[in-house]
Length: 239
Image (tube, rainbow, N blue to C red):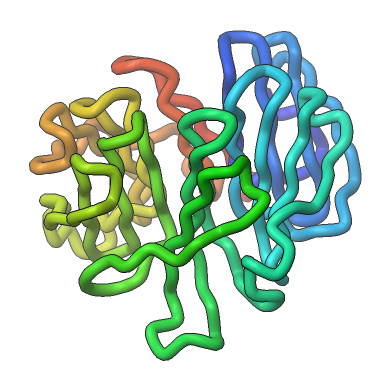
């Protein structure tokens, strides 16, 4: 749908009718499969959003902002408190249920900068998670054990809930490097690359295949959401 009048950056879908989207200082919600969107102003610049149920959702962004909605995105409450650095720039958030979630972003107060956080109490408090290698701006889990983190160069995968991490086989495609990654199960996932192409994996991220270019070449897509092994939704700005 191109009639929302503003530019959402990211989205989350609970089923084929209900969805939420977020962007700079605004939040969107649809209850009719994206045909129509209700737009509401927000006090934060949002980078990522995730829904756990049709009523429960989380959104994160700059200045340590982490918010939670329990009424399908109609109202939002700030959470996280002192456990999230006040200048933390969150880039992605992922919940597998109402209590357990992960958040990736940039913290200028640390030597490495990039950090991964985890919560086990619905976002009330967050704990840093140690990972090898570079930092991450994308995180996704499909269950308590299988998860992935990535940036625009490399990625890691875990099969034990983040206790150990192993290299994810993202090839060096130059500008085809991933911009966002989303899995639908432990095996099948999709990535949207900086070269405006979709790529797909069927082995948990060990290998990837470029699938196709996306139409509307002037659009700058940022949000990627895989509904199934064959259906992907995307959001972004129009050029």
